[in-house]
Length: 282
Image 1 (cartoon, rainbow, N blue to C red):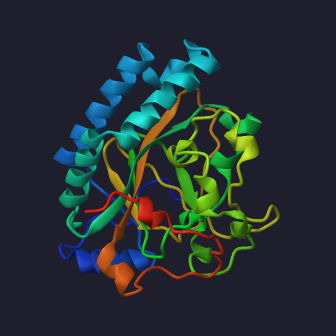
Image 2: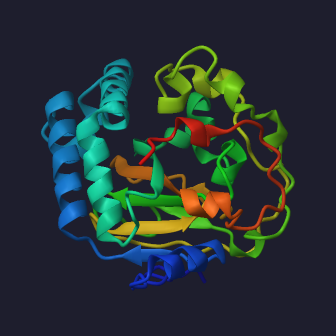
Image 3: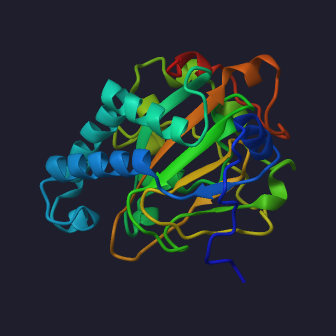
């Protein structure tokens, strides 16, 4: 039976070296919200409300056409990813959990939107591919952060496959070359600026018939912060619950760990390129 409550660690160590080493070993932290995440979540939700112009942002798909919703969310994706205001928000968030902003490079905030029934749209298929984030040319010292904008049940988030944290997963990560990914501009880097990119771009994924073993799901509350290694094998859940799931994710790399070649295991990543060069540097 799948766990439906928090199956992860909640108390981040006071020493961030210990935190990072723990995450590289496979530990996952789901920590309480704090002033920094609460401020970020409020700012983001207010901005979504203003851009979409609907009463309930979780039901925006019932008021806006697909084209209108996609265009307006595209504007928000660019804003949250590129605007220095949200870079500062992120610096405050990572500092509040003990990460040193002066030694941490980051890939900025991305707004993630999971529509009810979205898994039936072929253009959205890559959203649901089981994957490791490191399959997209991130370093092995990658730590992923994720913050929900609403309280979510264990059927609305995503699931981890812990049996394959350090075991090979058959995959096509060799198709991903970061230089090729960004050769036509930043649209793919920001994400979902072109409604057809899910059909045309080369997204890394596991082989179709792979059995991932055990599955771990989790519930969460608005503003909590999840931190896990980029090597964790995981997958966004399909949902048809009538409301949109909004969340924020971001990626952190400690530059000292890169120099020391510290990080989580690499059992199967064959992606090419260096996305770290385009992270926001400290």
